[in-house]
Each structure stands twice: as C-alpha cells, then as structure tokens.
Image (cartoon, rainbow, N blue to C red; front, side):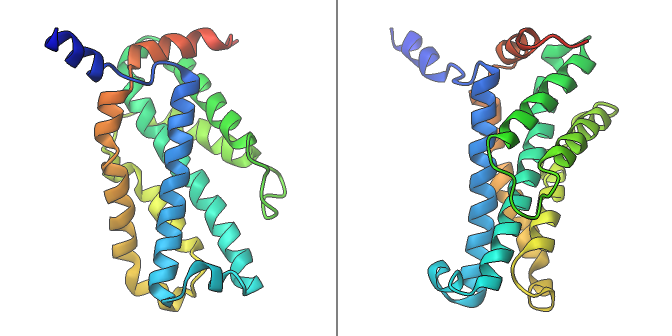
Length: 206
C-alpha cells in the first residue's frame, strides 16, 4: 500500500496543454517580478510603494515588468520544447506550431502594455522562430537558455545603466538560479507523453 501511495504522490501533475500553459505563465511572471522588484528595492533601499510614487519610475517599471515576463515565458517555452521533443518524435513541425500557438494564447490573455503598439504579435512571431531554430540542435541546458531572459531584464531595469552596470553578473546569476531551480519541477511534474498527445489533438495544423 505504501508503494502505491508513493507512486500516486510522485505522479506528474501536469498532463494537459492548458496545465502546462498555466505552469509556464505563473512561473514566468514570478521570475520576472521577483527579479525586478527585488533588485530595485535593494539597489535603492526604498520600498516599492515609495518608488512607484515617481511617475517616470512607474512607467519604466511597467515596461520592464512586461518585457521581462515575455522574455521569461519565451525561455520557459524553449525549455518545455526540449522536454517534450522526444515524446513528439517524428512531428517536430507540429510541436513547434502547437507550442507557438499556446505561447500566443497565453500572451493574449494579458492586455498589451502601452509600449507594445502592435500588441503581442512580434513576440509571438519571434517565439515561433526561436522554437524552430531550437530544434536544429540538441536541447540546450536551462542555464544557457535563460541568458536571453536575463539580458532582457538587465537592459530594461528601471535603474540608470551607469548604476546597474556593475551588477550585471549578479543579475544574470540570480535569474539563472531561479530558472535552474525549476528544472526539477519540469522533470517531476510534467508528463511529456500526455502533454504532447493533448497538444497534437488540440488544433489541426495545416
């Protein structure tokens, strides 16, 4: 009985495309906001509520938050593609199309911020291209994948470049630490075969 309970406890919790999307969405948001808010409050030694009273900072924070979120979500979709690739053997194009469509669906749940005058279309197109390119090589290590997100966070931080420049290695390392810490969750909570089966049956690809 104990063995059966242990197997049930270890059973992957993410078995559908929607559940995968929710998992990636929530964690991308967590990584983006925790990194940006944490850095700004430590660097300025002021609480976020005080910082947000300055409109220029608030506007810059809004831009940084959304750019970081989209970049983190993109990185996590590349990680997911690497985890799902084996289960989708023989149908790489379908996997890219399904994941790209899921990425776009998730982004479109959020109203595009003011600086995204074209909405999320450019991000969605870049995601499709990035997934296609990723399939040309073996899956990358998560620590390497997230350099894209880390760079986006660094360049959009609402702190003057002269002040944040010395902190770039620490910022990158922090993002890598948070994302690599999720590797275990990918391996233990995601049922790749079930997710791929759901993805492939969700929408017909021409």
